[in-house]
Length: 260
Ligand code: HEM
Image 1 (cartoon, rainbow, N blue to C red):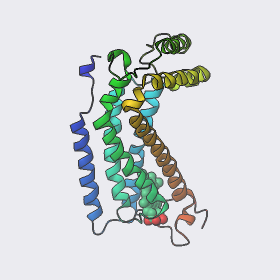
Image 2: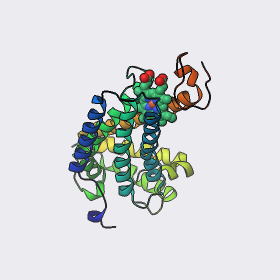
Image 3: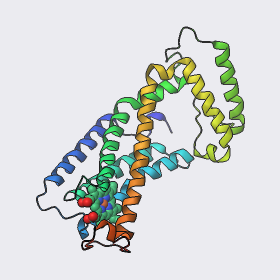
Image 4: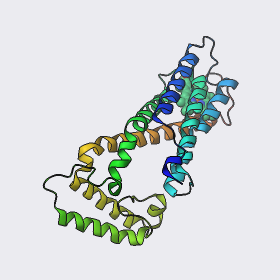
């Protein structure tokens, strides 16, 4: 597909979408008689919202495994599902106690949305250009002391490894995806080390990428915390309902009341 015709979301649409989610979430919080999180309506909203919030997880798996035909379409699906899912979650939590263990999941969710939108809207295009070395010849600030022979050695080693990892891939653009890690974990790891050394040598990360690299890592770490927290919350309210109700009546749909 031609790059210009690829479905994508402009920075403006992302900002507008995030803005709408913030407005809808704020309106929900002003709702005077919002239902308790465990009431049928609020619990249903929690369940549907959580289902939609698993879309980004599917997106990462599809993208990393190379299964998705059109990663940009998956990206749009991820952003839309997250937006609608978040609005539903705000209905779920409107009358809940935010200073509670599930409140941390909410905090992580809000952080992920805000940081993710900023990351995508402001930095991301510059990021892909910066690292697509072949498409931006001389586009990074190589340090004056660059050891060209050593750099060539790293590129040769990467090319050699690539013959085994993914012969059809281009060295300058390649980074190991999930399928490579599963099939050739050791070579994928060696490739990553070489790529890190190369990036340090040419100073690409030092000029702009370092901040972005960390932003992405923090985003992924927060996402991991969010999903682990969400799964724990679901397990607690459905199976350890007695524990969640702290000795009181369990007034929500649950499977077992362990921990009471
Ligand atoms: C991103 C997803 C979710 C977030 C951020 C979230 C957050 C919260 C928060 C902040 C509370 C209030 C805690 C309190 O008042 O002590 C709560 C309570 C509750 N949530 Fe969720 N929740 C999510 C998903 C779900 C799902 C999928 C279910 C159903 C399977 C669910 C079921 C419940 C129930 C039954 C309660 C009431 C528990 C109680 O009263 O102690 N939640 N949730």
